[in-house]
Length: 316
Length: 302
Image 1 (cartoon, chains in turn yellow, green):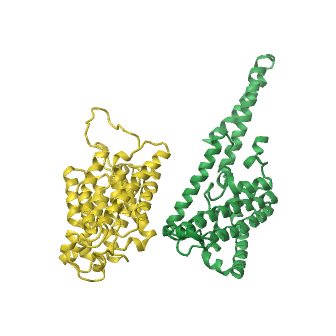
Image 2 (cartoon, helix red, strand yellow):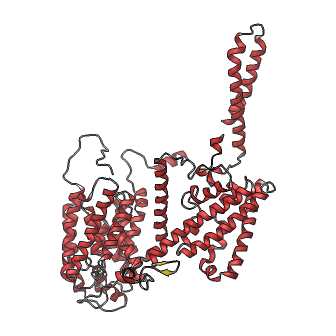
Image 3 (cartoon, one colour):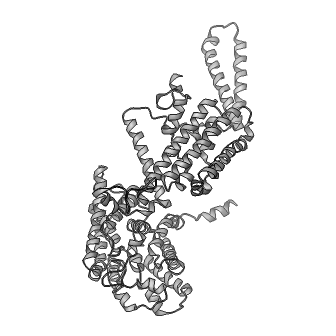
């Protein structure tokens, strides 16, 4: 992207909001969830998070160095990608997995499409799906010293009982960053209060998901089941931190609502009718792909210009 | 004329060698023209699949090119596509039966993609663009070159997909558990975890994209060194095809006529008008006639 694009005539308002500023706040907002993951899973989780952040930043640096481009690792977007990727991995993965994932996220999903602002899907999620398809056994191994049972969502799918309180606090097996609903919501509150994200996408996502679960989940208005579905898996992390990614979500208000509902319904379909227990990452990636289409049909009408339909009527 | 006659890589146009190298490198159907993508993406899960598919296609391509070239004066233009299909389909049936009899394993592995050679657009493209206009020998070598170019490309794709996605090379385990490489290197190799996505469809796109990028880089480097790369990718199946649209033909003829007349009037005006003052009338008549000829032509064009 060019450094600055002025699209209107002066006067311009200067603001302190920059990419690196926003990304830094996203990193800070992710820290509670990441910290809880480290507390929950031990030192392994910390190593995986560090490796994955190192891998994304180093890949971006090397790519730009080799191609003689401006080094953009200072904008912290690679750090966010790395952190999100690490939080999407179980803590049992071998050391090289986050590195491969980081290289794929930055090199293939982000840089080959033109860098920040040009990527067509969320790099962290792209890498997660890449790893999930390539190494299914490693990526779904949630058994640690502390946890030997299946993830609550898998248990729920198998029809077993789960403890909702544990799921909300986060004392459950799962990927590093997704377990604690409370920690994620704290981080999300920071971002919402700063105005970095708003509730349009996460709100419609979660509400439409809940409606879908009530209608098709097979348990009706069962409070425990619904809250377990909400707290389990990557729904909260996905809704607040990945579906709201600026680059890969619609910019129009109407588009945001459509996008949120689309994600909610897709996640519901994957979780209720799908083979695996989890479907957030695939749902968001498919959502990313239809964002250009959503934006095309929800561009607001410019002031003073008649809608196209009326023109056609006139012609007829 | 000599420059125009120059074909790929400096060889004389339409000689067997030029046609062969043209198909193999300069107009490589997969990496430069990017045609025949369906088998390229679908059957390249292993190198051996790529080789078999490529050789089957080469056989059909060379022989159908030869037969179509021989029949090119017999086949009427209006029914040329059905005629091509008949020729190509008979060779494909031949290949299919032979494979079923002698290499049933490969026949099973390639499945529906063997009969689908009939609609492979490399074969159609070459029949339409080259064989239907050229002599037997160059057409035959064009088919061989194009076919081998296709074979090489899909074998390389298959090789990388197999190696990264399964750790094997022509079904020999190189990386991953059970590596045939001995010693400490073998132990190191055996730690490799195959990246399964490369066996799946998405991996085909990634490998193909990387190969095309390398091909473009080669072309770019050649341009940097000042070599003529204008033949790269041009003159392929699309640019060669002349669509004989009757309106277009008419327009072309009119344009030619107009150009010829314009040159005529230019030669007439300076010399004939001024010098012979005795006979001004025939010259005027002449120009008027020319104008009359021009105007309907222009109106038709509009």
